[in-house]
Image (cartoon, rainbow, N blue to C red; front, side, top):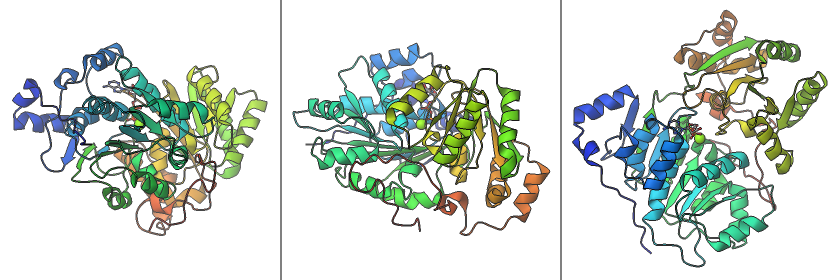
Length: 463
Ligand code: ADP
Ligand code: MG
């Protein structure tokens, strides 16, 4: 079978843009591009030949114009080429890959009995996979395109039935997908459009063996697209092993950066002060709006949540030791605003798009600066403003320097205490970034979707 790339000709308006206009537009929207034959960006939804039913959904959602990553990412993705797309949290990356995916499916021969999906989207957590599927369902609602979500912690039966009926788009967490492949409930022979959302996370040592296994079953002439808000230098080389002649598009600075719509406060505290400080903070900010509090470990998360509830705070918690049913329920209560405080481990750090999260609190500092950027990125999404409070202890001192850089880049105040820690702290053990410096012995929380064997590799250190 031939993979017909979904190449759409540019519209007259796009074609007519002069090189100077293109430059001006890219500058205005802080778009940096790399790669050969980069297509011109699109300034409006009408500039892309999306199907009418897609455009209708876009209008219904009330979107005024493409976000910067969409403006440049769409024409690139529609060229059928590989792509690395980096843009801040909450900037519409999901639709940056889903809408071209719909166009891509429409350009392929229809599924035959026994065929697996045409589009495969991989995501690091179950909740994120489900959220992406909801977005796919919404924007492809009036099409013939079917989708399903393959993730662990829930019965396989319905997922198996979906796969056997035939679905064009599969959104999956790696563990459960590998189970489905091993037991021949699906195959990846028809996949020609592969997306790694939260790509740096998907390629870090926790997931890399699973990604390798999955990718090895996909035809080499596929189109591969990576998306994230963070892209540590260390990941680039590994990432490029799975790419051919890629484009790269970066919105804003190429360095690690936080969304500028988020006000960032960092409070230097001792471990024993944390709980009282948290309660004081909650008393100050609690007005019924949603507050997301991150903890380091599942145990710590349970402890603080119990304490908060005993003290009368409406807190519910989500982490990897909870049943999926409870995780789903807690997230839906939080989304609905019925339970305004959610405590979480890093399972909730990436991708989740909950409207009106006003505050993110880092009760414990995360294991890397990338995680910091993603955690606080649960607020300040899609043009909204948000606030992040971070407790920072002497034990976190090695992160001070890079945290200061992130604060400064975003025009945030750096307290004298933090500045002193930045000067005094010993440099990280190995060069740049929390990415490699990530604590290995931490109880990092992640979805272990495989029912058999080890949930994740992690056998090979990053370097
Ligand atoms: P990211 O993956 O970049 O963190 P998401 O794809 O989750 O961001 O999108 C964040 C929010 O922005 C979502 O609620 C989404 O519906 C909304 N959104 C997407 N595209 C646009 C747009 N062009 N204009 C306004 N809002 C948008
Ligand atoms: Mg996202």
